[in-house]
Structures are given as C-alpha cells and as structure tokens.
Image (cartoon, rainbow over all chains, first blue to last red; front, top):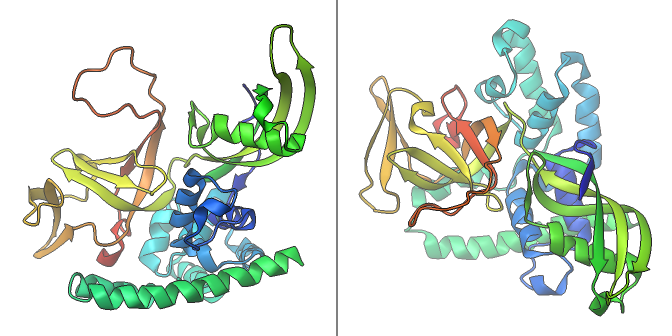
Length: 165
Length: 192
C-alpha cells in the first residue's frame, strides 16, 4: 500500500452522509440486502442523528456563499456546517480567537445566518422532553419513534430521486 | 472530520470474485482489506469513494489468482486538532470520560480537561463507575450521559502495536483521540 495523497480534500459530514445514502444506506431494517458494510452503517447511524441529516447541496453552497464576508478559515466553515451552532456560545468554541477577530454583532450575524440557512435537526424540540421523561415515557417514545422513522425515510428518499434524475 | 485520501495498492484478486465485473470485484476486495481499519497517520477508513485506475492483472507463476495495482480514493475519518465534535458518553471513571461516535470509540477526555472545578462521585444508578460534576458557583452540572457531549480535539495519536500486552489491560487501540471539554460551549449540549 502506498499513500499517494493523504489529503485529497476534506469532506463535510453531509457529503459522507449523501455518499452512503447513494450507496443504499437507509434506516430500513433490511440492512443485509444493500451493498453497505456494517461499519459503514455505523457511520450512517451517527450522521443520521447529526445536523447533516437534512442538509442539501444547495443549502451548503448557499451557506458557503453567504459566509464569505466573515473571512472564516476553511476548517471553521467546515466545523460550522457539521455542528450547526445555533447560539453565540456554541460559535465561540468553534472559531479560534473569537473575541479578538470578531465583534459581538458580527458573531450574532453569523449565528443568524446559520439559523436561517442550515436546517435545524428534526427532533431538536423533542430532545429536551425526552431527557425529562427518561424511563417513564419509554413506551410512548417507542411509538413516537416509529412514526418519526417513517417520516424520516420519506424525507431521505426525496433528495435521492433528485440526484438520480 | 472526514477526508478523501488517494491510495495505491497492489492486491491479489481471489478467484471466487471472478464472476463479478472487474470493477466490482476489486471494490469488494478493497472493502475487505481496508474498511473499518486504521492506517497510521492517515485515519480510520470509512468507505471506498471511487476507483481511479486498475493496472496489471498478471497471474504470477505458482499463483491461482491475478494481481492488480489499483489507484483509488478512500473516505477516512481523521479529525483535525481544534475541531468540535459531538459524541456520546461511553464510560466515565476516575480518570475522566470516554466518548463514542458509534463507529469510533477511542476518545478520551482526561479529568484535568473537564471544566474546573469538577469533582467525581459514585453513580447511584451504577451505569457508570463515577459521575463527574462541574460546580459553577452554586449550580451543579452533572455529566450524566443523557445527551450528546461536544468536545474539542486536542490531539490524535496512533500508538504503535505493543509487542507484549499485559494481562487484563484495555484492548489495543490503533488510533486515540484526546479531547477537552474545558471551554465555553463544550460539554453536554443541555448545559448551554
């Protein structure tokens, strides 16, 4: 084995997610039928719960275009797309030397841009409830998850057909 | 977090794959060889992205299979230093936290990189060895593993394979990430 180029380009979480999805990975329980290995499914399972799950190529391009004026480093933009920080304190940890490079208004502008352009996680409002319910609502949640799963799959299918077409 | 890497590899194509078109057969064999493995200083191989070039195909004397030289691109997991990643709590003991991404589980946050002042106490539910608590003023923030934990990558190490392993020690990990949650915005997402 010879490494020709260790870094032939970074990928966002979305690109990896999209790649696995095009290979046939989905939340479908019949996982043995598609040519996706178990280790790839583990990556898919992680990404499907991350901010990448409902991004699209257009959204990422739009964000790249609109974030140019902030003069962020490539790594920072990549990290912002992957994490989708929705508050000042979250952005602060991603951007290096945040307080010397940016005014607070600029950061707020950046956060607003993130919220406006990058779609939120579908289950974000439920997350807090789930923590509170913990064991009590276990049965309820199972039902809820079932419904959620079906919806997610529908959402997954749409961009795929788009890409194929 | 993820990168593409270009690799050249010479492989022996086992005859049982000959029923498939060459491309697919080689891809299957590459998946067998590389997927879910760590290449030192390159990262964890996630997936074969595409195959650029296939050369050769000679059957060497005494071999029952053809040998090909392939140039291809791999998707590798290799976080950069300073990156913020969301992970789940896997273990929590006196030394600190161990986090998991599902597909990668060797992420350690040592106790001195937890927000200070932090202290540990035994976990009443017994799910983890100890529970870490950050005391900020009068409020206590508990790392209970219910929600995702964001951490900053401090270093990525590729320890060499030990010749002899002490009995009862942790299984060897070819790639170890050290992280910190001692910064504003890091730690369990419910804190902020």
